[in-house]
Length: 109
Image 1 (cartoon, rainbow, N blue to C red):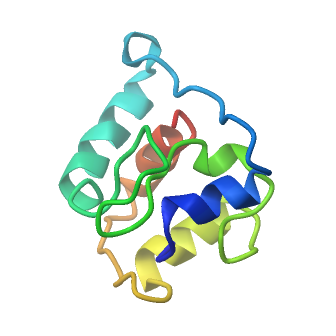
Image 2 (image 1 turned 30 degrees about the vertical axis):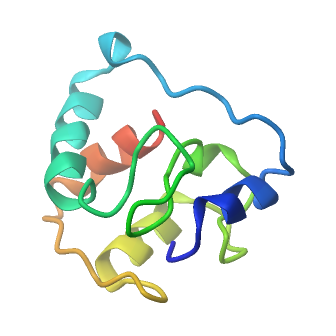
């Protein structure tokens, strides 16, 4: 996750990426996950674009066949990356009870 948003486009085959789910349609889990994202992730990652901030933008992160690292964007891999870090990304402490909501939100991007 410590690569540029441009790398995400390369992984996606330079095709336009699917739009993010409208907030008005978020489930309660996705709404809670958005709050976790804003507190824990937004300082480094834009959610609805591939343009980078301090880390890559995360639009369509769970909709591409592989993340820039080459690993598939499974919930298990995302959880591992968030909690342990990867490359330049530091580990992010997310409470176990908040992780399912954060993952639900990431699936809306």
